[in-house]
Amino acid sequence: MVTTSLKFLGIPGSLRRHSYNRSALVAAQGLLPSGVGLEIFDLDGIPLFNQDTESTPFARLTEFKARIREADAIVFATPEYNYSIPGVLKNAIDCASRPYGDSAWAGKPVAVIGASAGMFGAGRAQYHLRQTFVALNLLQVNQPEVMIGNADTAFDAQGRLIDETSRSLIRQVLENLAEWTRKLKSEPRASHD
Ligand SMILES: Cc1cc2nc3c(=O)[nH]c(=O)nc-3n(C[C@H](O)[C@H](O)[C@H](O)COP(=O)(O)O)c2cc1C
Image 1 (cartoon, rainbow, N blue to C red):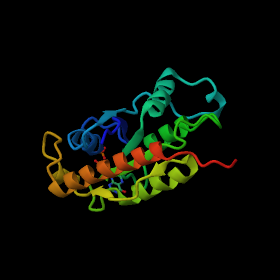
Image 2 (cartoon, rainbow, N blue to C red; image 1 turned 60 degrees about the horizontal axis):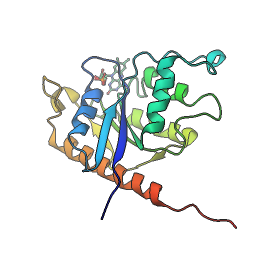
Image 3 (tube, rainbow, N blue to C red; image 1 turned 135 degrees about the horizontal axis):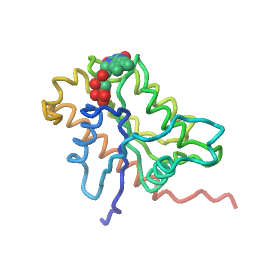
Image 4 (cartoon, helix red, strand yellow; image 1 turned 120 degrees about the vertical axis):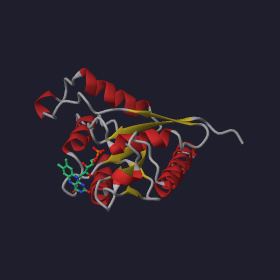
């Protein structure tokens, strides 16, 4: 069977140089099913959202929206800040959803992973992130949930993901996202004639 190649866009919700979440996406690049590529888009340079200027976006935001649109599917890797998603990530999501009627997110397949220093693996943040998918009409893969807790031991000093359970969950969610994306691409439109 011939399968089309897919392009995933990984978005880390942290600007930290040694971010565990970014490192999880780097690990994901080595755990992809065949025929799938994953590029990472860092959120540096996305300005704070101001509705007064949403129709004249900064170049970095225009680039971000183009990269989202080019991708077949999105993979978010979110930290947890005070039981929710970091402002940096929420801001970028909001920016790319505007102006009204020109959202870059609508109808994209999406998966979520998360890493945190605490034991819950950014789970609370992941649920807040999943709630935004309803507004954005992002089409999520539900399972497996990938919650990388105690990140200081799940990653080694070089930022490599060494926790085998987490690696296997990432591999599985990427497989499920590829299958989900292909399914959505191949479904014929319903005819109402
Ligand atoms: C403002 C702030 C709030 C945080 N709140 C939480 C939290 O609610 N739960 C948690 O597990 N870790 C929390 N942490 C710790 C993060 O899990 C930790 O900083 C982690 O490394 C962030 O992800 P990153 O490595 O990708 O930057 C918080 C960190 C910051 C800076």
